[in-house]
Length: 115
Image 1 (cartoon, rainbow, N blue to C red):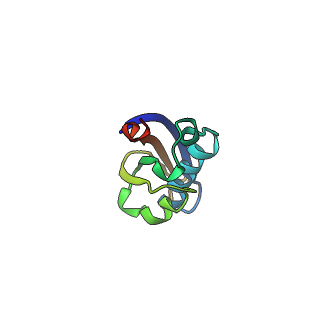
Image 2: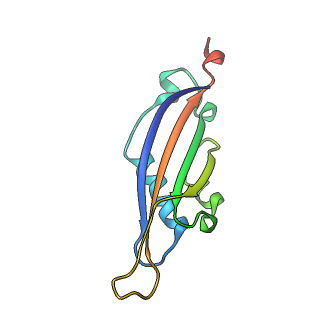
């Protein structure tokens, strides 16, 4: 597999403390800010893309991986959710924190098949 591109994104859950929502928004941020037609550029079908996704949040176990994977319009992304991101406490010290998630998406192809 040969890495073709990497995209980055950030997402938040401002009031609900929802780690899944923050992760989905980070993925959307990475996806929706580009229009790279990598599959077509190399003569592949979009289903040939190997999509590796790394998401960082303070509480990885609270991320619904299936819900995040459903954000992708095609392909079968492999998700790795790790400790990272930020939780920002509310100023009054009560309630849910603001959750910040970071995402890195890597798209790869089996370039040998194209030959």
